[in-house]
Length: 103
Image (cartoon, rainbow, N blue to C red; front, side, top):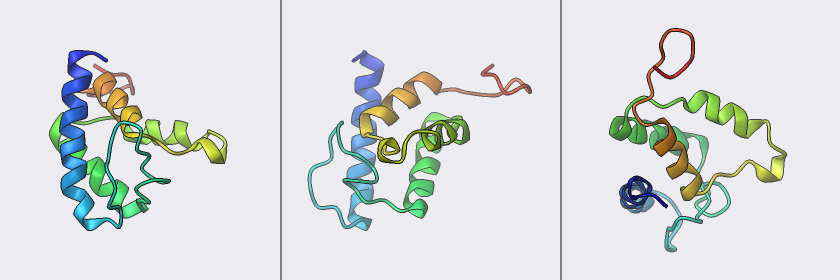
């Protein structure tokens, strides 16, 4: 992992630990923790998480990311903390140039 990924991972894990008080998950949250299977997040939880992530890291192309996840086979649609860290690091500072491409 890069230094940036390690920093984002630490920040995201801290955010998730804070939010976990509102969830029914009482185990440890780590890079391999999956949002649906392990944390059992519902759509509203995911929306809140997405908004918090974007308020921290700026606008991110979540719609496109979720569309790609939705194209996967049903048993492969879950995302781990590490997957989200990679997505954030790849798209931090994302802004559209008006044609759907990062500026």
